[in-house]
Image (cartoon, rainbow, N blue to C red; front, top):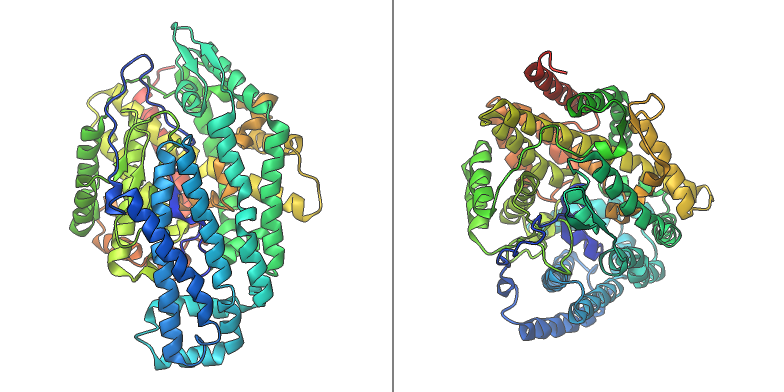
Length: 629
């Protein structure tokens, strides 16, 4: 998802930043009275539903007036500054409306009123796009020379828009005429339909199975239940959970295949419409990323697969499993019950992030003191976790499904990292430059996870506890660096298939995914055996509907590890450079922001540092194990 400063790209998918690979969390309290829900205070957005409706009507009227700017914006530098500011002000207020609608809907997606409210916002999104579809063609017609002249003449008034205008100049070959832009704007709601269909199907309509576990517990295997029970101690339970869960997904292989295929076709259509050779080229170009970033990531991850295979063999040794299967990759290396309620999660988060400095901590303390989060699972609530930071004049909001274990603590640290990033960027940048790229966003949150890991390892009181947290750190590299790159390879392959004119069915998606799954887990070498049924996992990953989003988790982990190594070594210069990178928001391309901070994501170094960390963690584990096993 791009958070780049654009007056046209207003898709609702831009509003949320998700925890990586986290499809769902579960309360972990089957048969126990759930805790009292901790809710976010949406009155900070609007005092009441009536106020939201009034604001909606007002914004709608302002949107309808925007076409009146046509032909006037480009007259001179002053009119350009006034027109762009008027459009930006409308967009800012639209985002606030949309954040409110999204948050209310995600509290309980079953409620019809919430669905209707969100549908109204999505319709407004399309209306907004149509109302300013003339803008970029008019600016393109103005020409590079005159735009640069205007920027020089009205330097201060146009400062909030200078990056947007420079980016527009760079992308002139990919802009359409007015008619083309109007058609694409009108089609935006339709092109976003696959994601909406997918979410409704898997969150509201699929009948998830129930199973009886060996401990006598009856478990509902919805997405949250799967996340919880795939790590069951009993191996037969794990196999049953996998078989029943993926068997349910397989029942929908054809329909879900058609939904994802439609998403891919929509992306290919949009890329072709904007004169790109491929969807990948378009996505990288939107972020100003050199192709070397993606190419180097995939190459280095594949070069680093021996470290991943070493991890699976170590896992088998610790778990006492001679032949590892795919359902053996989730149980912790050491079984340990963890208990991190919200109060404890908050305390630890404040301790863990002290190395980031007082300015960071000031924003964090403000965030944690406010009613900015919806905390516990409840029926109908959106699964997983995310930070919503698009309400520029208010503050970020965080959706959690906190279950009081270490995974919940890690997610807590992660999402508040996003929130503080938004606070830093909003304080340092005007609205038009505050919305940052995912390419930087995930570094800001994953570094918090790494600091948490090292904190927990350092403060562990027993060998078993230390092994547990080392295992969690190891699993984080597997899940974010390797797994997300595998997803990225899958996403590239299915787009390349459609671009080559190949049919994309549910069965073909399973075949492509299965080939990658087996290579990454060394099925042929016998490291981890993969059953055919588990190739349905592609259907479980919601991130495939966010247009080449996942590879940035992998690059972000690599970047976070690069920064964390230096922060933990006490490098004050790197700490300042890191905070400055967060403050930069969307004032430049993310690649250049990181380069300014000393990090080149097109070079092999951050990826090799990640593989080194993985091997270092395994060295520490094997040192603790000694001659055991």
